[in-house]
Length: 226
Image (cartoon, rainbow, N blue to C red; front, side, top):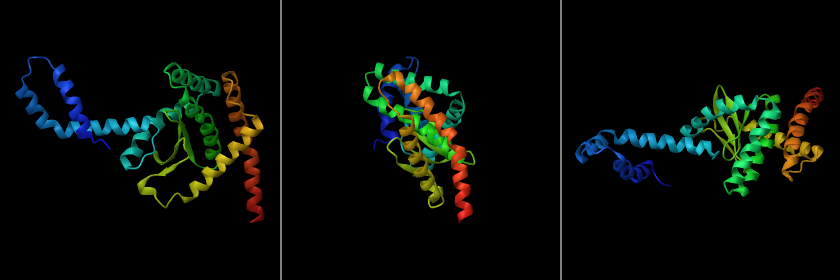
């Protein structure tokens, strides 16, 4: 893996070439000597934030923390009307196609399922937020901090300080994923052609909300039998 120091070294020649001529080489060298650590830290922070915006699985505490700002943004967007949300999804799909990346459309469409899963997880007591980033993800938040993240490949990462404390999340996530697969069959999800994608997404989210009372009754029945 390329380190922040190596990336900084690649950037510095271009940066130096862009400086006004009034700065001598000696002045620039002294500046870099004084602030080298600060510059490397800035590069490292930018790399972490870039990984988060790409929806890459976090491993360190800093990488998890980078998702907090994204969650704050995406929580607001997720709360918007379904019609507004699906327009944003379609716009992202158009961007990928226009950019010559049609193979990435399947990842963007994964957000539709992630949002339905978030609806079910919130009903089960989890603070879940779907993230429409480069590779959509599903974040779990506790006390305002991202403690778990499920990526488009289905991998679930747990915050380093919460290892062993969120074992019940795996079962909740699996249950939500299974329920959404069933709802997709009920809705008759067909991602192609594109004209049906919006209708399918709206129907899936509506079905997810409509299933909540049924889930509540099922849970209550299970408690009575136990």
